[in-house]
Length: 420
Image 1 (cartoon, helix red, strand yellow):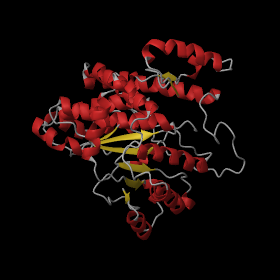
Image 2 (cartoon, one colour; image 1 turned 180 degrees about the vertical axis):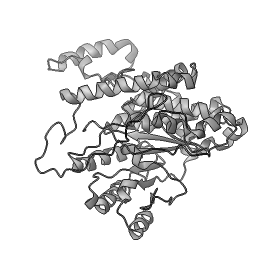
Image 3 (spheres, helix red, strand yellow; image 1 turned 90 degrees about the horizontal axis):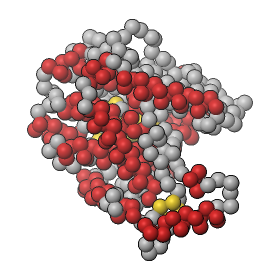
Image 4 (cartoon, helix red, strand yellow; image 1 turned 90 degrees about the vertical axis):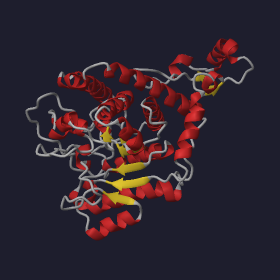
């Protein structure tokens, strides 16, 4: 990014463009350096001092409010079911000693009070139709199954005060864009907010968990996670609950998980964890880099080590939100939040149940998934070690398990991987 530090940038920015184009010494134009972040917006390679002092001035208050609510911020790390499948009780206890919370034990019983579907993030969740209680995320459970679960139907009939755990990461893992992931998280939150009393929402919204996924697109994910924090503060404030930071949890991506290059997954997971920490995530779930049964304990150890390297050696948890003031990160946060809020308000005008039953949302995600697959097949979307620079020494991993196709009441939101 290039900064034009001149007295009147708004007046002379066009002159800077002309000068920089001449000095570029490339067949590319200055416009070719723009970052087309998504279908919703791009970032200009040339900027001036109008941002954030102008439209982005509110970001200063956002940062201060966030830091006041997180004076002792330290992220919690978690390892997934797959990592622990062949682990002993001693191995699990060791992982927890280092700050990693095991979600599900080897016999399927809960270690942390939840039977959270970590396996499904790589394709294996199948919530029980016999469930009778209000679960933490009945909307996303219903979307995974392709039918309304009893917990969702109960939610529409009786009040429940939460807190909820919204797995918007499923939108990402089904192929959705960053803006779609953020907007749908808010839309699900709105469904839950309508089911609770106003005083219960105000009391508990700070404990609601907003669960996102991080891809290897380093800067984009930093901006997305920060935008989620900003959106949640705005959502809570508009619903008379004050500017609450909420609890943001981030998991490593299933879309960019490779079974042909499992060692490369370690690098991708490291980038994704770094994005989560720099963006101030409250907890991070690290998936195993391989599903090889003979490497279960090794995968668990490597997942733990990614968090330890990020915190004990790189000290990424020493400072909350170190990206404050970075033009690109602030602009990304601003643009992502604006685009997601607009999409959320557009979607919120529809009848939620009929909109899902018609498959309109699922079709939007599927369209983005098809675009990703096309870019990946053409080589325009690179995964090093997978569709570029493959290694003959790569240790293959079993593919991620995929839930069996079954008849559904409406289109299900299913996870996928580019490396299938």
